[in-house]
Amino acid sequence: MKKLRGLYITNIVLFFPIILFAQTSSDTVAASFTLKQSVDFALKNQPLLKQAYIDEQINERDVNIGLSAWLPQVSSSNTIQHYFQRPTGAATGAGGGSQNLAIAHNVSTLGLTASQALYNNDVVLASKASKYSRQYYKQNTESSKIDLASDVSKAFYDVLLSQRQLDIINEDIVRLRRSLKDANARYQAGVVDKTDYKQATISLNNALASRKQTQEAIKSKTAYLKQVMGYNPDRRIILAYDSAALQIEAAIDTNEIINYNNRIEFRLLETTKNLRNLNVSYYKWGFLPSLSATAGYSLAYFNDTFSKLYNTGYPTSYIGLGLTFPIFTGTKRLQNLAKARLQVQRTDLDIENTRNAINTEYTQALASYKSNYTNWQYLSENVTLAKDVYKVVDLQYREGIKTYLDVIVSQADLRTAELNYYNALFQLLSSKIDLQRALGTLRAE
Image 1 (cartoon, rainbow, N blue to C red):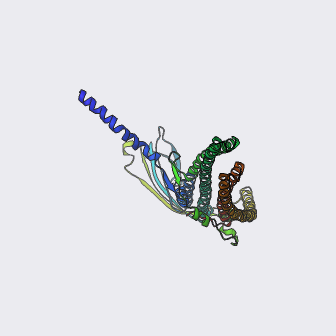
Image 2: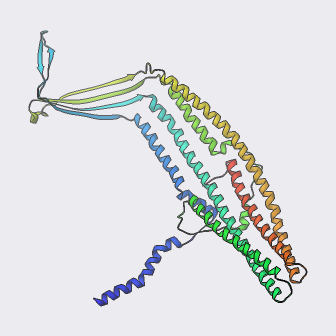
Image 3: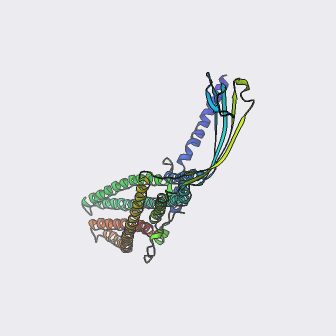
């Protein structure tokens, strides 16, 4: 028994780390995503987009519910009754006299009825509206995809920007630590006073504080990216990108003419107008009758003895047509017709307002893109110039030509130029997304 217990404890000690790793490894393994992979992942896993797909399925069920009225409607009606006191009725006999008829104590009827709609305004509306309702929900899903592609792309670029800022700050910290070391050595050698050393320490502390702020900002922005992607927040994520490719992707044809029909918002409103026009037709032709065919078959059973109730059945069957005329509905149909026409007019104004808003959005997006593109080009040149200036000033400082203040200024200029350059690049990429969206060319496939 002691040997078995010892073996059991040994197994726990040996295998517990493996079990623990198996349970946690899936959460700690990092996945690498490019921008396209991030968008593709979001299109498959984002809960809001899944809801849009579910809305399509719900609408399909609603369409089928409406169209089911065209199918035959069959029902069965069955009764069984026992009379403690038999009811009687009067009937005229063959000789013209009347006689009392007594109904049996036990009565049962088994019936089956069927009806088929031949014409009905409601089912006609359901048939015509099915096409546009399906189109509306597909367009709604497409709109959700476009929103998702835009949100994921901007969140992706936002994280990349902060990561690149962190790289620049880390490079600056390396330079500042080297400068601090050099300033301390020159101070110990009696070449300069302690001012250079103190200035280097201040600059390094500021850079360290900026690094911490940027690190925390990366965590926050990464959490938002995971949210819009529908990614597990407990799993790590690595963003893969090519700086050269990003610069190429930043370009877009600014001479493209806006086409309102490319905008999903515009197409959604047109589909909405088609649906509301169907409502106008529905109320306009609401005075037409409803026509249906009916058929029925029933068996009646009568007997004073319950056990013999179903020995003999008396069948009844019929077939016929039903015609229903809406003669007067208290002006309800006319009021609904007037309301439906007003809703169409309101949709027309929505379309006009949306067209104006799209034009404004496009103008603003194009202006922002052109401005950011020009800014990016100039700041790209500034980075090259700032690097050259820093190298020269740092060399001159080591030779005793320049003061340490000049070194600090050139370092700050270099860091500012690099940060501004990447800010401009990612602002340009974001403004490109806004321009594509304004043009209606942003796609999520």
